[in-house]
Length: 115
Image 1 (cartoon, rainbow, N blue to C red):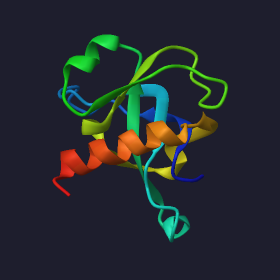
Image 2 (image 1 turned 120 degrees about the vertical axis):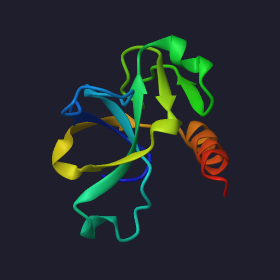
Image 3 (image 1 turned 90 degrees about the vertical axis):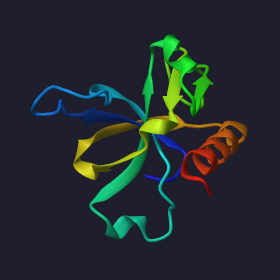
């Protein structure tokens, strides 16, 4: 698993079922740096949604499906929902984000985090 991989993840429902986090089985982008990442039991990801209305939020990127990325429908990358998950929540790799889109992700993460 490397930075830029698109994987299927299982995101759990919060115990009290409140909040606005993404849940369920969905694609996510691995954004953690490759160097030293193997030693952690968690990985930093950004989840996708197929709800195109999510583009109304700041820090989102529309990603169209391609053979390389493995997505089956137009999807919105929810950069503002950057999170760490246990690697056991990853079910499989489905593709890899194109380099030019990964650069957009980098810029959006910098804006989000004030870097």
